[in-house]
Length: 232
Image 1: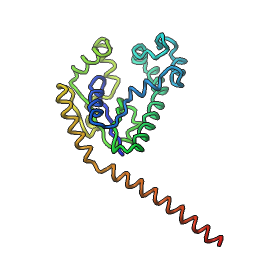
Image 2: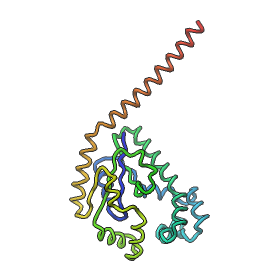
Image 3: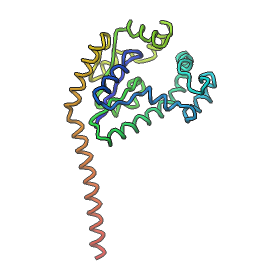
């Protein structure tokens, strides 16, 4: 099995692309979904978050108020770093555990959405291929303002906190332009799916695993026989 990293900018359409992969039976890991579980009330990350930021970032039911938290960290780089220090290692660990589970389930590849894949660099080593989702600058700004109900000034500040899309594109194997309609995005995504399905990397990987496993077994048997012969 190999891992395909899916990244892009804020509000460029990563979730849309991820949904198309899901429709085609591809195993996917959504970083946002994992982050929500990591920050569920009572978890270690939740406790650390509450201790550092206070009840200001919590809703009445104890869940993290992601909107308020976003307002705080995007205006303070030190607090943003603290949030990342609390959440990122746990999110990455959870995602890798899910990837291992998918491997033993027999999937040939999985798509892992990692919004800050290039910014953090922590998971780049595990990615066999990388897909970046892009759209026009004005569309990204409009979509982010509408989705998060924020002003253009705030939206621009948040977009600028991430690596420019041009740089992400230069480091990627595939690019999906989500500037057009859903049909166009689906067509591009399905084209990539066809390419990934033809990849022989997963069989090479599985062959290496099998060979390694058999080598260990034969080695253990050989040592056991030597010990047995020695006793005789």
